[in-house]
Length: 150
Image (tube, rainbow, N blue to C red):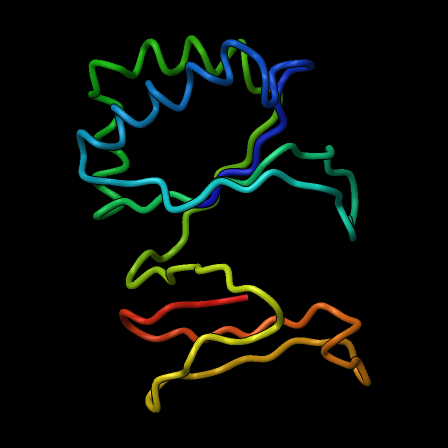
């Protein structure tokens, strides 16, 4: 699942509720065997087609199954979680995604890519004509059990 969140003014990242919510949320997710993969603060929205509020962060979660995600409705922490969410989150979109073999992201220094195993599919993204010392370049290797770097 991918969550896109806009927090109520002043809560992101220093608000009391913002600091409390991940603790309660983690308890719910841990009970069903899920995990948070990453949380990324947003710096800007580069392209918007239509109306979309400026978001604060994007979170990625992994659940063992869609049913496990639905089972969180029976969590003893659900009421507290939603009480905090009502006061904390102004706008959210939750995307259901396929979660088999989620990529692992590892930051590397410079513009080097992680070694690619022979059986993997590779993707390189860079502005046309870009030199590696002046522009950001992303190399991704996605395969079962292998890492993605950028």
